[in-house]
Image 1 (spheres, rainbow, N blue to C red):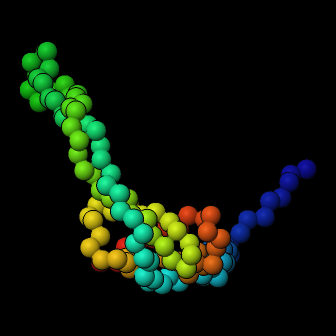
Image 2 (image 1 turned 180 degrees about the horizontal axis):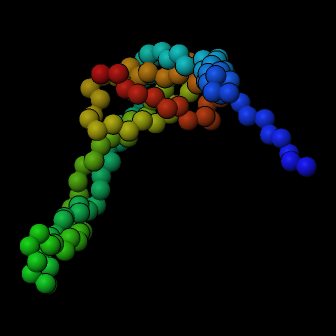
Image 3 (image 1 turned 30 degrees about the vertical axis):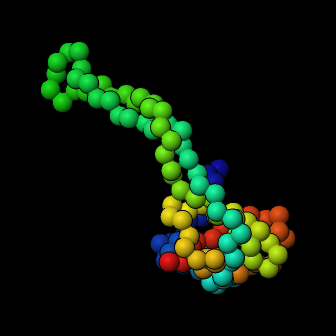
Length: 131
C-alpha cells in the first residue's frame, strides 16, 4: 500500500509565510522601545590610562616574495590616556559611564530606555550620551 502525502499548493505556502511574518511583527511591536533623554549629575571623573601601547612591526618574508610580510606587535611601555570613567547620579541611582572626552558640564544628557529607569539600582543602565 502506498502512503499518500499531502502537499501544500504554492498559494498556501505563501499564505503560511505571510501569516508567520505578521505574527512575528505583532510580537515585536508589543514591546516598549521608547527612550527618553535625562540629565544625570556628574559625581566624579576618573581618567583611564593604559600602561603600554602596541606598535605594529612589519618585516619582509624570508622567501623574498613580493607583497609578503611578517606582521607582529611589540608592547612599548608608555602611559597613555584612553578616556574617562564618569560616575553619574539620577534619582538616587548611581552608575558609571565611559567617555573618550572629559565632560565639561556638571551634568550629562543621556538617552536611556524608559523601562530601565524604574529598575532597581543594582541593574546596569545602558545609555548613550547626547551631544
